[in-house]
Length: 153
Image 1 (cartoon, helix red, strand yellow):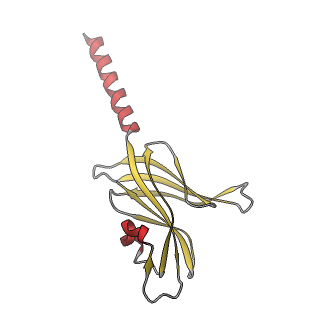
Image 2 (tube, one colour):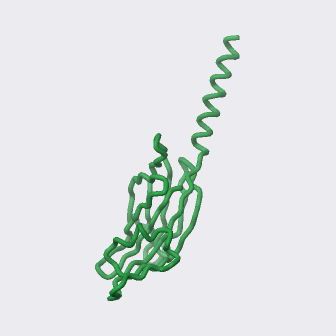
Image 3 (tube, helix red, strand yellow):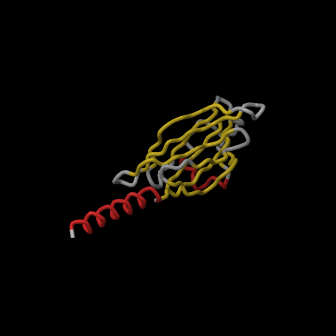
């Protein structure tokens, strides 16, 4: 009887651990270009309406979507997302807290002009709260910038 209890405990722990690691994080990623074109009224591309509140406070007057994707991230596994021809975003969810916030390791890599090498443009730990956008500025200047907005669901 003691042996059966040990096996039951071991099977339960293995099942619980597998379930925690196979859980996924649903995420949307939107890359956009923000520029200053001398507009008196800000222009935000209508396709950015879902994340308008995340970008309208930025000091630019024109916002245009470059790419958008919705994906599932698996705990402990890196998922790579293409931002544009030069930049790639790697996301690895690590842990979820009791409030549903997810700790995610984020790496943005920039390809060299010849495309043969990659350089880290960002290596950071993010805390994604469900429904709350996080802005990542990749390249920014007074005249314009490349931004990525992440929203966990």
